[in-house]
Image (tube, rainbow over all chains, first blue to last red; front, side, top):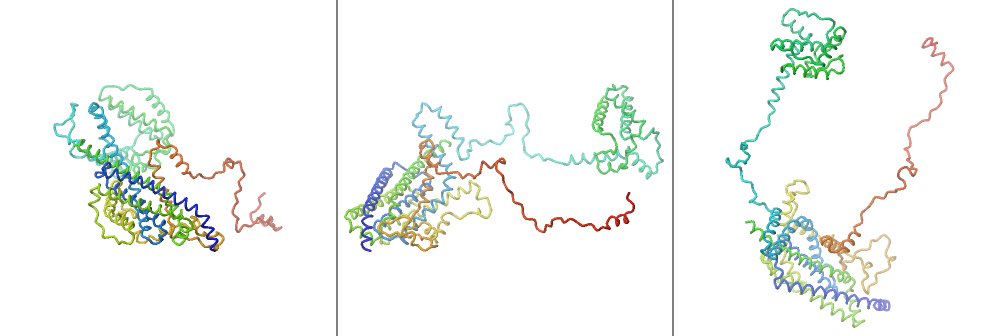
Length: 319
Length: 289
């Protein structure tokens, strides 16, 4: 047993020696650096009194950590136990602190950078001297715009009553906010609906019949040739309107090619059974849906023609 | 007024630069200490140490040197810290003067004294800045469960320190891993099967923290200044890629999809029509011809 340990010692001895020397050199190096900084601080070459306190605290923390390490080394070198010695606790505590402040570090980086840039700018300005003041002035203006603090000089003054733009255009001062109101729209919609219902009551033959019945008016007979489609009835109504206008104004509207085509088609239809399937819904559709007019059996391109009819009739009315 | 601000900021900026310089120097010290730190774990403890010393005079001498050197280093560090405190009026004022040292181990009491000195200052500063950052990032406005006014960092750390055993246990190395001089690490086969090798409370290691510091430092230095360091860092950060077998795409390889077994399935059994079936249907449905 003793022999084995002696052998082990013989093996390890040179390694231990080398390790010890290495450690000593490392420590000497560190000590040299520490003394250099201490000298600088004592000569007040590194004034930090105006700096950010947070960075100061960080420096102290790291320094404390290094001290703990060196103390640990010392104890190891003496061969004493480090188990349950407060130095371990201290190491853990400082390490926790340093880890926790890492996010703060990242977020404060912007501010720190701005300050360093300001310092760099200031030293640059000092070195450049007064000759280049103008050139630097613009540059520093740009930097000022980037400053992190609010700049009361840049605030817009509230518009005075006589402080108008030089447009020559009168701009009313904005005192009250404009309220977007839907009431007009609602009123318009209601009136439109009323008008639509009134029109339906007049024009749809079935509804007219019912209303006349209830009102006690006698039945109205209209001479029709064949079943009139809804289209035709509309067309007739428009033609009558137009005639009335023309008679009042003593002018005739010119008949366009489109109008001639429509007329031809209507005439052709008139003698057929175009209107047979119309009005099968008894007009109830129109009452309930409101604006939508859906014919059961009319031809497909009614929509287009309707538009044209409408626009052409509008054109005539303007004359 | 803007000029005033500018000058103020320039002054602060200079001080901040100095602080950064000190931080960098301290970090450098930490890095230099790492080698010594890790080798220190190999140093033997008391009875073995005296044996070594008796064995070889040189070792004893080397030990003496080491002791002296480390004592001096510690002294210089404490000097530095005191100098820093002297120069920074704010830090000095914020601190309380600690009570008399306990006199057990002079060096440790020195170190401890300094640390208690900066305690108050450190706590207030860190809490103040944590609050500031919370406000600027809007985290203070969030009322979620986790965010709701996180405790101050100092309180958090104080809470952890009440039970540091977990953290400390993680920092222990094992004797066999370190190879302490003069100790028999024992053969790996000797350990009983299934027994986890316990950490040795004598061996403290904080390589994780060290790695983090190193990484942070390398990231903070400019990209242009040291390309080699940058590339070294890059090599360490290996991206995890999904393992895809490129030769199996585009139907170049046959894949087999196994269907589930069908339960309660019966194969069709051919039906045997009774001989009177057609006659029966004829009677039922009448003449179909």
